[in-house]
Length: 188
Ligand SMILES: [Zn+2]
Image (tube, rainbow, N blue to C red; front, side, top):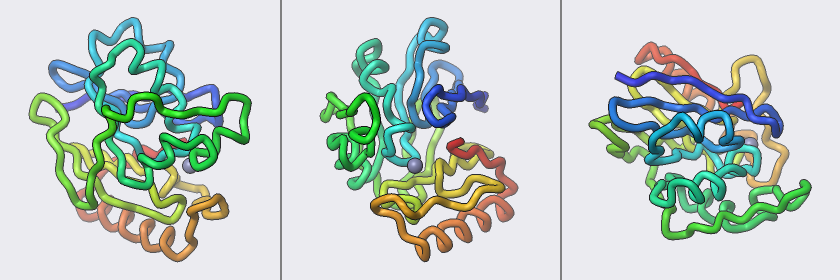
């Protein structure tokens, strides 16, 4: 069993989800870390829904505290982590480049990963908002990032966006939600 909570980040109100398993905590995306870095004994991993700046900007601070944290993304996500233009941070005050290449783990579509304590996460690629978009299926939850935010139209106008793919991804996500009766945890 897992316990899911979230922090609303100061930047663009993106969400960082904290997933507590029996022995450790892992995150979905990473913005402001102040509110939980004191209380968490150890954080083992960050699963990225995509690598836009507002979903990744806390990663260097996090790895400063826990240098062994693994960061899961796809190949596009990796490129964005390492390039402030691609992750869009260059258009804001603080250009962001992820400094810990060796901690990045590249995942494939459909891959099931054991994250911690026997908790598995399935990576479902849901491009459209961006090519780095991964929806994570963990337990009874679906973490959709910006690929599907209930009540909002999916943003496809940024670089790497694709309207048709976004529509396909939305259908895929909606099918999973109803088929397995999952709870949706969006990125904002
Ligand atoms: Zn985004």
